[in-house]
Length: 342
Ligand SMILES: [Zn+2]
Image (cartoon, rainbow, N blue to C red; front, side, top):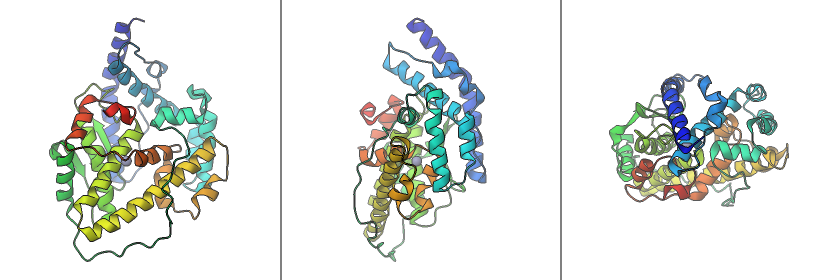
């Protein structure tokens, strides 16, 4: 294949997949709002040729190919019988251990040397024991202040303004049963539950972080107009949560910071657990490393085995975009690592 053949193949697959992914995205939005299970990936993504797309002559074409190959890998893994069986296991530590074992078992069939390589190819974060801000987990929560929280519209406007993105470019559905952000060729859509307190405002800010970045990517070729690596995408969402603290009255900012630090510690601990389970083969890692089981802190991990490293890396990178910088990052398209944003 010549370089031109590579480009033609990438463009042909982008053209074929775009309407399928748009329909998939619409179904994901409906599932998030309706509280139902997410739809499976389009079957066409599992075509082996999609996983083999590559371009060695140009980094932008290589990024387009890499995004399509990453989606293909996710679709093939989700359709692998051991993973389907493992996802039927309950959302508990025991069920997660089953999913971790399935991930390890599936790696060779996915063309990956081991579970660490598979997780890196899926999510863009190295499966390494995360450095953790080791603070006492039992420090008491600051009391809830009497002051009013800012309203969601004001928070939305301020975050979009800092990102350099028109707030109207991000459609918001604040009637979700679950939270996620979806980008289709029709635009970026954030779904999250109604905002009524600091916890729900934090979820909304996190999703808007994804949303402003997605909006900045809109209009690029399909392989570039995608959340780059999941870890980079979560790092931008984590920025929005830190930025929220600056929009709150001081007494609420203290509470928000305490909650964020608690979350960062939990995510670092979950990443260490995941590393122990997937790389070191310690089946009891969760019981030893997480301590008292708090499912709410681990909901994403329970649903997506291997994702903890991406969240921990996102926290550790602590991106601090200057005003307008997120819009500029988006316009350059799919970055695989923070260095690719520069
Ligand atoms: Zn997120």
